[in-house]
Length: 332
Image 1 (cartoon, helix red, strand yellow):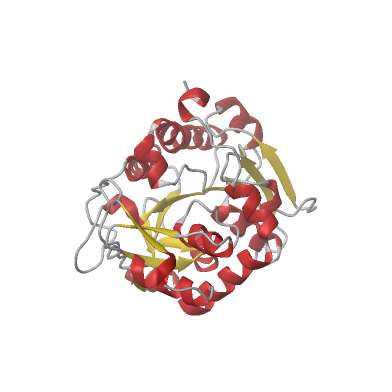
Image 2: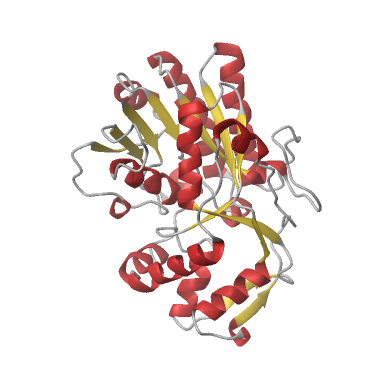
């Protein structure tokens, strides 16, 4: 079995690759893995084993059709994690998001067709659904994205489905809730707040902190991706939720407690433009079809995540203080 993993040096993709190489997925203990990543600000080679005999690392751009055609032949599947994923950055500039999430996905899909790849899994997000005040989204809900990031991911989902419907590409789509865990870039809420607390800084909490998110440990997410790779139906979407809904304020209070700090460290800041109020996924489909259920209790997972950042200051300081990218200059 040979897999090509795009974005495999990022937070979620690298966790998937490490688990795969560690023999964490039954039947894939001997799988060969090609990681394709452009090593943007949010990715790092240090997220991957340095010289694993079953891994090949290629630094490159998913928008390069010739590169993909060079790499893909002989692979049995592609797991497509590569994406720009930070909402605030997409509000500031959507250029990199359109290029990577839309053009990049289209290029990957075209290359998979050309190379006759037997199986593709496209990784997406619950943010494509927009915001929901009550209840939970099933996979049949309309896509109503509210940020440039979410809009480009919704577009990439529709592209993936169209390649199944038009060309018969064996592709499935996963949509996950908010991930957390080790190796997540400190621009995201949990690692940002944890590292700020470790440095004695304050926590920039948007608005009144009442926005609700559903949290999913990265290990549960990657296990669900593997289940969809093995048993998901072509052309189908699978929601992957964690089941743990918290307001941002409730989450902040948990982090304060884990870091022995108090509410004086909270800094109220102006709310984000177009800030979605609540996300919530109905994951009945993946539970009933594939037997998925999250395994990591949120409080346990959060505590181990905080401890990981506490024990790895070299990693997160390198990521946190890396020079800012310039999307307009890089992708003009």
